[in-house]
Length: 189
Image 1: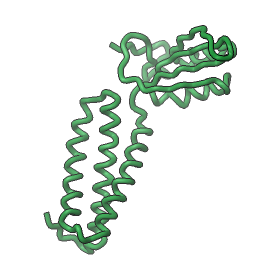
Image 2 (image 1 turned 180 degrees about the vertical axis):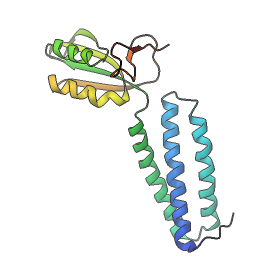
Image 3 (image 1 turned 90 degrees about the horizontal axis):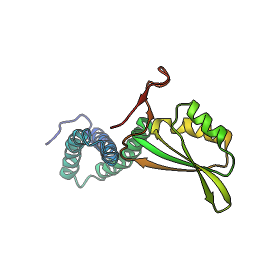
Image 4 (image 1 turned 135 degrees about the vertical axis):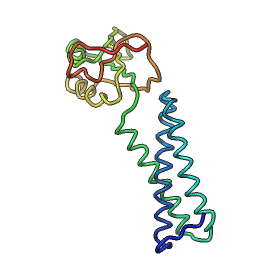
């Protein structure tokens, strides 16, 4: 496809950069969606990702002797990776499993977590330095910063381990409307 562009020495590299920025951002987001088990949205995003990529690669392949186009293609890839990760971080899709280990009495921490509508299952355990409390919770990724504020306020030296959760069944996770409707819970499955 030959484009008739005004000032092609500027506009074509800019179009290539923007196309790569778009398709790599979509690619990053698609991969994250697939890893989170959101398989219905990923193919839709993949369609547009490839469509944009085909445009970008066709323009570069027609003009392999133009190093500015090649640099725009590479820069678009780098920028698209950063933008894709930033978009995913803002969306905060999915669930996290959080394990909190504290050597101190965790009664206040557990009460604070539950008062803020976080499910908290706790166990007595033994660590390398003696008795500890293990607190286990599954939360929405969007709630992670709020959870960490609660943990750091009462147990700043607590060991916190976080992992992605692909799916859950049974149990309780606060509904998104939790702040508006106290006592309303979402039950997966």
